[in-house]
Length: 161
Image 1 (cartoon, rainbow, N blue to C red):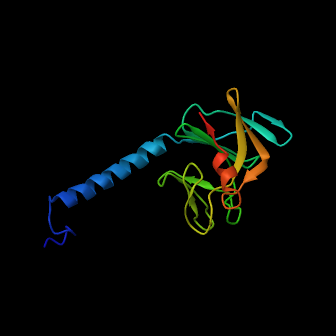
Image 2: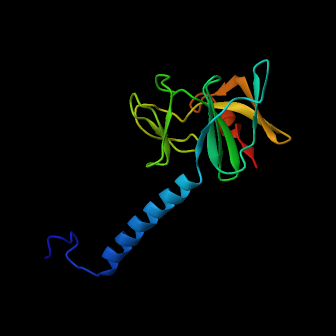
Image 3: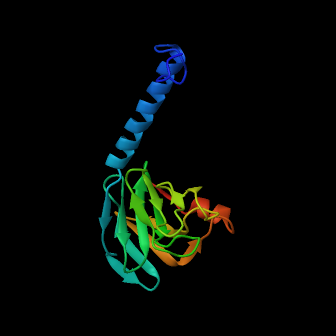
């Protein structure tokens, strides 16, 4: 058995499949990252608890630190998230190498759609209610949905583009 080859069969179909899957995963991560640039911005308008943001032209995220909102366009859908991790309310950060949001305090990880991946948190990122109004997304800061308490509300807090 060749110790450099854990399967002991260089060139066998199983080894080729594992190499293919590894290469495909790396390529997919690169494609998703390339499609998800992070920008910093501000609401276009603020009326009461509603904030208006332009619909991003392509996949990516806009972080509005002033209102603690992350607006994401990903795979033809738009979301608005609370900037804070649902575990202990630390500001989330984007980690391009993992193509995920991550909490710097306890390392909870989330997909671009806010779904929970791993860490100490027990649910996805909190989503704000939002609607499309012309070329903008209107985010209602008074309506925050937690995935564990209101799964239907959390699931519907998305705009198809």
